[in-house]
Amino acid sequence: MTVDPAAAALADSAFLRACRREAVPHTPVWFMRQAGRSLPEYRRVRDGVPMLAACRTPDLVAEITMQPVRRYGVDAAILFSDIVVPLKAIGVDLDIKAGVGPVVARPIRSAAQLDQLRELEPDDVGFIVEAIGLLTAQLGATPLIGFAGAPFTLASYLVEGGPSRNHEHTKALMYGAPDVWDELMRRLAAMQATWLAIQVSAGASAVQLFDSWVGALPADDYARYVMPHSAAVLRAVGEHAASLGRAVPRIHFGVGTGELLSLMGEAGADVVGVDFRVPLDEAARRVGPSRALQGNLDPAVLFAPWDVVAARTRAALAAGRAAPGHVFNLGHGVIPETDPEVLTRVVELVHEESAAAQG
Ligand code: CP3
Image 1 (cartoon, rainbow, N blue to C red):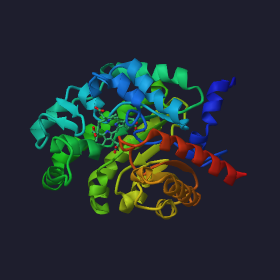
Image 2 (cartoon, helix red, strand yellow; image 1 turned 90 degrees about the horizontal axis):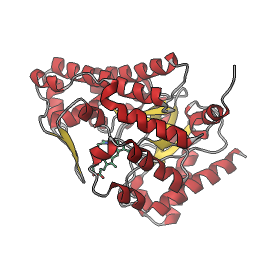
Image 3 (cartoon, helix red, strand yellow; image 1 turned 90 degrees about the vertical axis):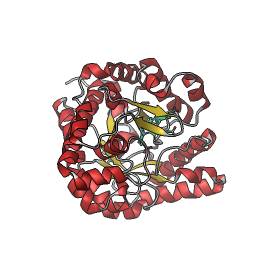
């Protein structure tokens, strides 16, 4: 069997090794929402281009995805896109409003309104295949992370009609009309399994399932109403990768999920993303030895003086050693006003400290 040296270098990258819980030369680091947030070069290329139009333009997707890789020297790229892109692609009437987030024209609160959700076909999202092709050619040995919104977080936007503090309409549907809820979640899970399979086939090296808002639920409700659907997505993407003869690590992340961490791991993740509320050594106890962890510097800490940022970065690295594999990240996405220089310094510090600790 001939081994392609580029593919071998990619498979041997610190990020993929840490996801597989193998020894690493340094702790890999990337930042959620690293693409398209605080960078002036991002604002320049996005000038006058609406968010969802940018997500459908392969050249722009590739350029914005590459910007943080060039600037910060992170160990992985994350595809520039949004969790609502596949919904838009099947014709759901929605938009992303700057400073607000996704807004849906006709919220789904009854069985009849489910007709907005047809199956996703590869032809709906040819732009992502093209963008990933451009990216894998440029990235070389740097892994590309594909992603999708988890069924619950997408359902929350669809049912509420936009961002929500209390998720009251979502919970009313879930508890009041469980059959409609299950059908909604089933359709979303099928769509997200297809969306991730397309990204994996096109060349994504890992995937992250964002269940950003699932921390709104207690564990019992998570297990009954959400976990089977997230598990279906994670299982399907694992099977798809295996059918291609590849291992593609699956990262599973949510905010405020301290009480859900072990279940989120059991849903089928290789790596569990941890927000900043639970220290990584405690998270490792909750998740167990068979999964790596990702996290968890508080993104707001990046606004404090450098000595505080450095101390908190070192503390997260130290706590992360309790996990069988650690991918350094923030505990949630980069805040738009963050100074890019601080993120560059965090990457340098993570690399230096962790390389020294290995030696
Ligand atoms: O991580 C990355 O850098 C890749 C790009 C990415 C975006 N959205 C780009 C984006 C990713 C991974 C997402 C995922 C996403 N989108 C999530 C899960 C991650 C999380 O933060 O919990 C969620 C909940 C969404 C929904 C969404 N889309 C929100 C809450 C917002 C922010 C609204 C705002 O302006 O504050 C968006 C819009 C969005 N997604 C922008 C970007 C760069 C800003 C759009 C703009 O500049 O017009």
